Length: 157
Image (cartoon, rainbow, N blue to C red; front, side):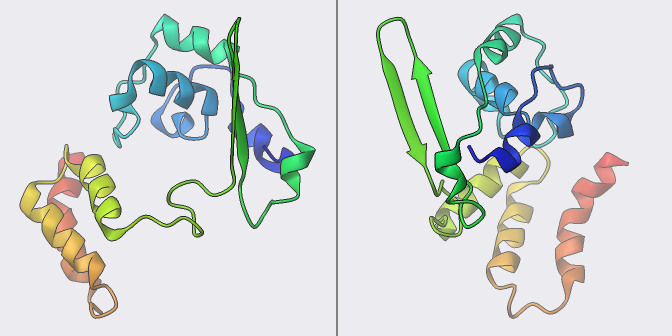
């Protein structure tokens, strides 16, 4: 990946809190391999200390690439390479799903939103929030949105 952000995402140590899990690509890759359901756990209270995760994190290498540097900052490209004893697989991604050049459809946004907030927001509230956001241009009063979210916010205090 471009040198300018390689250091931001390359962390060998297990994160000790939820926020540190987000930019830790080694941890994210290991989590995807062994506990993929936790990738979209927005609360992520249980940070995995599974020995398999640390072992895979130690095998992942983050390297700066001059070849990818030319795309940055218009794109945040990456190339992933997986090596086994017998094969080498490689994939370059300039615009991942969700990028401004490869946008999610509204249905994909709703699917991701529901997956992230389902543990903390009921179905009716999720539908109302989604409706409010979809019509945000017409909604001038954010109090309605905050009220929809407030039951989940109160649970946190």
